[in-house]
Length: 177
Image (cartoon, rainbow, N blue to C red; front, side, top):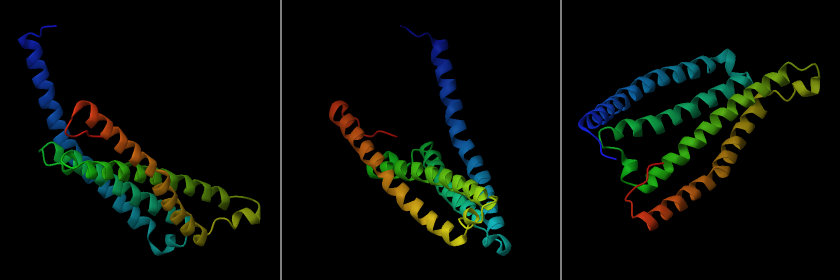
């Protein structure tokens, strides 16, 4: 199929618009996301709330989301200036992939744990209400971090095999996940 000049102009215009959007939208998301997560951490870390197990889960979720935000948006922002280190190093690309999805999973789990904690707190059964404790919350957070980091590690190896397969067949210099 032969493209005429108006098709080429449309493609160039769309590429220009996409480049500008990728350059400026991550900055806005990074600023707003940082403000939101920092405020969450400051509010839930206040002394009256620090003794609440639900607050501990929500602080942990905000920290995990904060890390996820920075791992992904900074590299995509740098990519618009051809300065993304993950485009030059497969190891950094794989670490970014692993960290991004591990922190997203952790953030989701911590919100789920906060909901379960609220369910325990509102129970009529005293034995179930005892399950909502600061000690159990801290222990659950540590176990969740260890579990997610080990459960998600298979994706790292799958990504490595995928990249090696592509390198072997197509001789591509870099694959962005």
